[in-house]
Image (tube, one colour):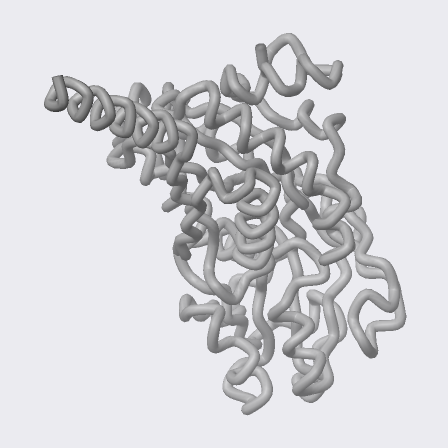
Length: 317
């Protein structure tokens, strides 16, 4: 009889542990380079969602080489994998285009949307001592563009579109861009973080810079949306900067269960007020930005948006 009672107690304890374990989830969040605004956003998201979920969602932030790598990781990742990327790259992957043309598109069929985050904003930063004030002045100059990231590919494309084939493009890590700019090793660098971008703030603090503004004709050539970085966003930059922007979202896959996706999405939106206190860039993000996605929402995320009566486009259901 005593043995039976002991076994019952052990069974109940095991059940309790099992229920407790199932109520928690470990999530890997693949972000961006550690020097970028998107890595900073990921850390903010991870900390806020962890607190909002009473630490039931355990989020590990991983650095990446950029959005292309994040999407390609889907082929080998299992479980609760979350990543950031512009929606256009998911579309390219699922349609076997560009850098994904050698991959099996079925690998990307399981990608699902969760929520939008601040958009990519192209910055072409040059040192004042380089004498560069316009894109035309870039002829014969050097520009560090990073490697493997969406921003580096955009910068290459822009130089070609703007007739600047003689610009020396340097595919080194962006983490060394500010030091190289200050030391005169490069004339400028390109970065695509959301504004205000940490590496641009760092550059402003260490040397005098200019941020190049695009004409409407140049923006039209890029086939991207126009965005104005307001004067005063960066110290010493006292004029509006016209540049390009691209939406960015947080994604997961169908490997994540519905409850975890629901809790993660809910905790993000319920943390938004606090996120806005940490950085101004969060204020522009609302459920109306869901229209930027072209990949269906995860069922767990859709459950949350249905609860709050968000206007979810039919293509995402």
